[in-house]
Image 1 (cartoon, rainbow, N blue to C red):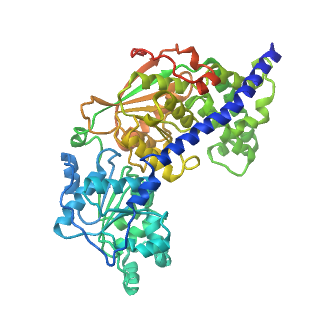
Image 2 (image 1 turned 180 degrees about the vertical axis):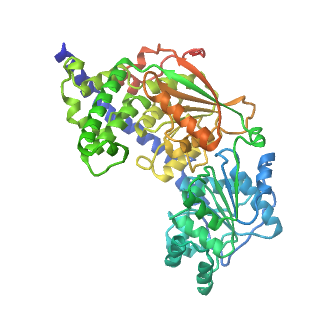
Image 3 (image 1 turned 45 degrees about the horizontal axis):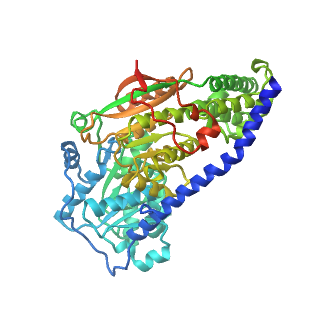
Length: 578
């Protein structure tokens, strides 16, 4: 029986391997081509948003009107801006950009302004430029990035434009880099920036804009080019408005860096009564998804392997060695790989780890008495055959039960997100499902295009943690977490994607999927407690059990991953409240 089971597992792997390698790759290539050829192509948009002709001298502007109204709490935020101000603690979706736009409008009515709008990424830069054009009526708003070569930037005299959105690196290269030594000295000292002011004045340097808006500034306060830009702006008397969703004021060094630039730091909380009036109820449904028996067996056997490696490390280097992230010993590196494999296999499903190099480990190919002579890798193949990915099936079921909601799906595994995204495109159509993963699989242009795809057309965005911070993701009222966020910052950023104006919806709904009989629920609750402690961020919680029965056509790797057509839709009562 053992030999037959082993042959079946190997035959299963061999017959699906070629299709698994070729078909998903072809589908992924098709999606990238779709983005590049669609109206959402950021490469085209960057060209459209870049200056078309040079301006001979610096231009200023006045914002005559804005195409929105502030909520009361946003007006209160606006009223508290004076001097150099840092706005902290409002998660994405609560209108930091709208407050910044209203601030620029108010200031421009006093006198014409020149605006430098700093963003940490190209996708966010494109979105902020579109916001300025659509919501502030600024047709002259331009986006400058490294995609435009320095020589071309010089020819077009891009910095003469009155409203420039750009990454800190681009502006630093063209304006601030000659003063790198002075800036390094300022950063490393405890003194104020008067010495930097004198250096810039003696060099006859004038900051080319009179207002700087630093969006998502937590990305570049510290030893970065963005911090250098803000220091130079402060030294030249330029007004600065900075925006950040995550305060992180508990670190003394962090606070010191911020106070060198900002004379006013305003911290807001989603628990503020005025803020809470304008956001929907926050409801997490913790959905207990049955862990497939074979997968649970793999998970438990992996736990034994991890324990064995930990024991060997303690015997060699002492108990304290387990608490440090050692990179010097091969066995320590293997331990982290094994821990990641064990967590990911249940957090993002069996198929998410199909490419993991850890499967090459000798221990996975040794016959185990506890498995009746099979090895752990054979058991993993059987788990794949039993159920390709239980988290994907749960996500599909939720999406079918909520067909009219704008939905975000978050997961840590790039592989799982790509697999799920392409499966959803097969079911709902490529135009209705956007996929967003990190730079290893998508360029910055493609990431921005995927976001615009979701903003303008798609109903579903499937994304890794690249979408959790620094990107202006459009409004959504439903979110699915394939896996629990690993820290409070991720929790806040994920939740912020559905902290939107209610618009008739009763609550912002999140489904957090946890595999039964694993560590997932404990991890989720631990992160939630830390989030409540550090950020005073609370939410309602309910528990639901996912019905075990699923269409037979979804249970194998070949059928689930590559079968054409969709399984029959399930009824809307597929969840049972506990």
